[in-house]
Amino acid sequence: MTSPDDAGFPDRTRSGDDAELRRKLYGGTVFLLPATTASRLLVDYARDCLDEEVGPDPRTCHERYGDEELFERVGRVRRRIYTEPTGQRLLRETAASAGFPAAETAFDPARLRAIIHGAADNPRAAPVYYPHRDTWYGHPGAVVTIWTALDDLDPAETFVFYPERFDRPVANDSEIFDYDDWVSRGWSLKIGWQDRNASLTARYPQVVGREDYGPAAGFSCRAGEILLFSGSHFHRTLRQDRGLSRFSLDARMVHLGDYAAGAGAPDSDNRSRGSAVPDYIQPGTDI
Image (cartoon, rainbow, N blue to C red; front, side):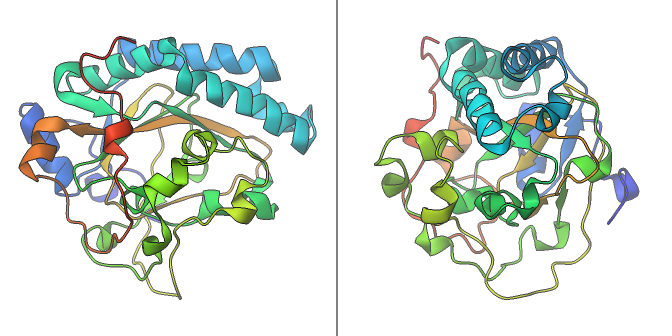
């Protein structure tokens, strides 16, 4: 795996205006930007929510609760962050601080990601670790993912990109995904991991066959730093087996001017159906 900052990956500085930032993202640049006041507040809010449910040291929550109870507790936090106005407002402010102004950007609310120690061996969690592109889930080529960790993390605790596959197709079954069908039975799948058995019945897009994806590029980060990357990037979550669980927040967002103009990253192999964009929180929405 490529070490952080090898060959300038990820890019920890930005130059130019917001439009230039978006052009670079659509071209495959991955940015890891310094924490902002807004991102720190978002992290503090998520930590407070977690502390209420799993205790003051969330990274060791798997030592205190069995799988079923932990799933329920983390699920309540995930639902709260996704649906309540505080999380949505802080995400909007974090995105604006990173170069995506509120008046120009629509976004999917933040999802809490809980990568629990040892969970990679649980069949119910298998889709979490599928290598994928975010575009395979009904998102457009203009989609940008915003991600931040709740703790300082080293490269083994985050996830990896396969930069050589950014604009090259990967054999996959994304045609199985229909966004409208995905949300037709309620939004538990959209929020993510509200149904303990969803991964055993729902179909999540994944790669088909075995290929050489090229070198994996990882990264380290500090809590509250803002990772930005195109939803067209092929990437994979890493299993956690060192005694600590990992918590992070992420969301999808689009610059509506770029979306309307057909701008965005290459969309080399996405065959998913439907669009999540109409369900994004739109500019001017009172939250």
